[in-house]
Image (tube, rainbow, N blue to C red; front, side, top):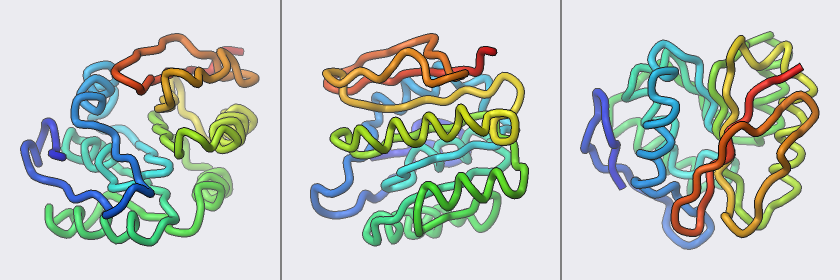
Amino acid sequence: MRVIAGEYRSRVLQAPRGDATRPTSDRLRETLFNVIGPRVEGSRFVDLYAGSGAVGIEAISRGADFVWFAESAKPAVRAIRDNLSALKIAGGFALEDRSVARLLNSLVEKQRAVEIVFLDPPYEAAEEYEETLKFLARNHATVLGDGAVVVAEHAKKKPLEARYSVLERYRVLEQGDAALSFYSVTE
């Protein structure tokens, strides 16, 4: 697994050992950033269920202003810290290692609007998708900046809803067994 482009291009990233974490493939990450690329530079980016941190690190490499990572699995948290350390990334990020809900609630409390949210919970955790997308929809005025995009990686065979309140899906890209669903706020 490598950083695709930007300042840390071609640098190797480590993934947690074992099968508990399913890193976003280089190819799917490249597809994701081909779509959201113009939005990344200078953005505030959230990587939920971050795993190895590859998506958030890719955002940092491509010029995101700040990245929030949320991951609670200890081996994955260690991988994120090791990857950031190996790349000598000392600032411009925060890591919430307790829960996704804790990070999202913190963003609401501090009124931190972000431009890009990426979420990639375990494919079998359907409730995580629903809870997270509904939370973002309920709190969109505080958490999602103007023109924000929310992207969910999920199993191709388990499509997500087309709409979660004010979050409406406007695009789906499929690659292998995975799919990316893109949402924006429509009121």
